[in-house]
Amino acid sequence: MEDSHPKQRLAWHETLEWHELVAFQSGGLMRLKKIYMVFIQGLTANLKELMAFYPAAPPSG
Image 1 (cartoon, helix red, strand yellow):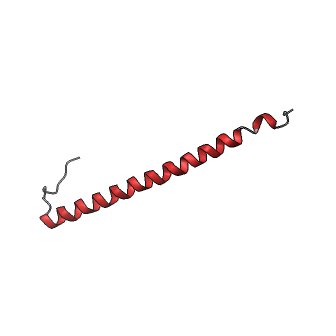
Image 2 (cartoon, rainbow, N blue to C red):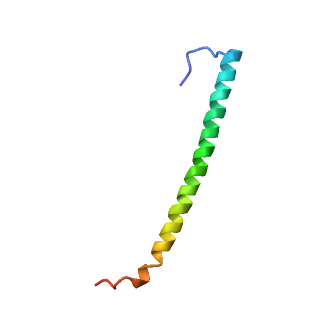
Image 3 (tube, rainbow, N blue to C red):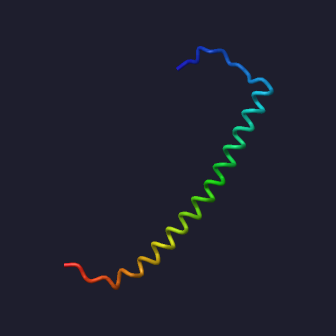
């Protein structure tokens, strides 16, 4: 697919705004990753604790 629009460069102020947006969103993504990792570790610990109760369950059948 060929682009029919001529290639245009961003103005200096647009480049700066674009950079700020990328930096802000990247930082937000890194913070979210840390939060999710804490959440996942907590859920993993909870599941491991609950799995210890399986041997005490009555047999099925």
